[in-house]
Length: 157
Image (cartoon, rainbow, N blue to C red):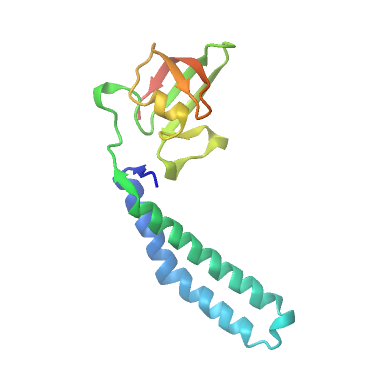
């Protein structure tokens, strides 16, 4: 399994979520299952199945977060040499069609493609990390194809 690249802030955030899910949410969900079970016939008890499903989703999320921590390496937030780093907004131009777009580099924990927050582990994020404004970058995709972009501007946070 490939290690997740996380900042210390990411790790602290994940640990806090695990603690919340174990110490606060888990007891509430166990109680909800218990209360629903006491309502009688389980074969037609929707509340029981809904409570059980929520409890299982919580346990699955805890396992997922713990696995992420187990297989992670701590990285620095900033890039050495003043290039693009985590949290920086990068404006790029796609060489093929001249269109421009802006992306924010984040770790896997902060990935949000709807808001153009891309992981430093994605092909584009990997290609942009550490680069400077004005550089032409070749982005290699997993299928072996590639495309070129030019970094127009970097807004360092």
